[in-house]
Image (cartoon, rainbow, N blue to C red):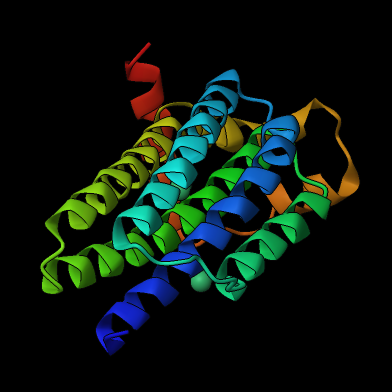
Length: 201
Ligand code: FE
Ligand code: FE
Ligand code: ZN
């Protein structure tokens, strides 16, 4: 096998394993999120991910190569970090913001992996494979955009309100963290966010 094709195979096997890990992790992330919008976005991405796995199978068939096993350590690390975050005691919307952070890290990992694989396939002159990989790349970018949109429109403002009210359960640890002195910039930023969310009402 040509060595560039061998590199492409390695990238694709890594992505295949990454997608499998995401499929395993998504149900827990959906379960742990409170925002219906976030749950909906993650549920949608789960079915998109299933199609992406099928597309990768098609890529291997098109290349006429047998898929070997590669463990994606990067994705394992990202998911492990996400699990650590879930163990922390955050209010609902703040936890949702953390889940968005985890998921966007995952999307960015995939975006770089699919971008690299797409470009390798194009370099090898395999435009059919390059286009299939680009299709997935666009889906990952779209998922990333949607998550930013949800964070900005609802989850982050809600998480900020949560921190101001202590989420209504008034636990000491929370009160301490919300009364932590803020830097001037943070204060200004919060005020801006607040007035913006009011004006959209
Ligand atoms: Fe994916
Ligand atoms: Fe990887
Ligand atoms: Zn994805």
